[in-house]
Amino acid sequence: MITIGLTTWTEHPSLLGGTDKLTLTEYSGVLPVVEVDTPFYGIPKVTTVAKWQKEVPDKFQFILKANQVMTLHNVQDEGLSMDALKTAYREYRAMLKPLTQHNQLKAILFQFPPFFERSNKNFHYLQRMVDWLPGLPIAVEFRNQSWYEPGVKDSVFDFLKDLGVAHVVVDEPHALNDGVSFEPVVTSPQLALMRLHGRNQQGWSTKGPGWRGQRTLYRYSDAELTEFKATVEQLQQQAKEVCVIFNNNSGGDAADNALTLKDMLGISFGDLGPQQLDLF
Image 1 (cartoon, rainbow, N blue to C red):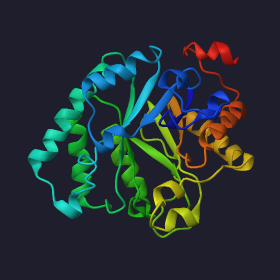
Image 2 (tube, rainbow, N blue to C red; image 1 turned 90 degrees about the vertical axis):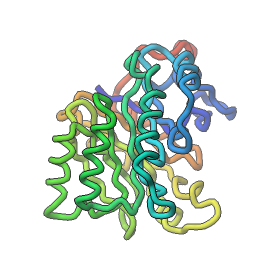
Image 3 (cartoon, rainbow, N blue to C red; image 1 turned 180 degrees about the vertical axis):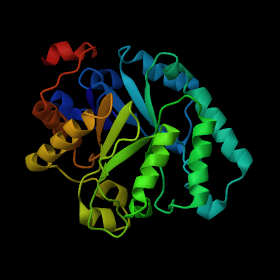
């Protein structure tokens, strides 16, 4: 199975050929999965998650980012107590209940910070991460190239396989010292997850005001999408599901790229919301 989605649902009016922000219900009439970054900044209330759930079809699924405490983003600046860490995991698990009870959680996405490098300490943390989220689907996105160094990356992939964690295949500018390489490797038989950030090398590396808005300002060409098509078909031989998330949102390119890749793959999505009937 192949699924395609976007990060957030409001920022993609071209899914419906308009200019207005989309509702979650409108989005779910076109695509079967969405990635939500809200939990990274603050763990939502259970009532908020239940509200999302009511706005989508029964088989629609969510990828939720792990909270920034769980991804250790604040460790360098503030330190982190074990009590704070355990509290974050406990509150996060409670927040997930409406989704897990109805099989609407595709994955918890741990997008680790660039300073989360390969080390014995961090291998140990990955093990704890799984222990503290028992039975839940987890995907890990590394942003430090040390995990992919020749001679060690195969051991990293084997470790993730043993944990039952999905390795996130990342596309971003590759000619950067702080970027990671494109590694189309499956570590979970259930899910292969690709996240496509665009290849705006200048925007990615020039930090400053507006940086977050500039770094994903990129439109994939048909030639680049054809390469992704081949990768998806390769991964499909190794995992029950391949899910592709477009994160090149800044210029409104993600939706158009997603629909083009969908057409290239010759796939359709069933069990969508009623908007699908209006579009097609």
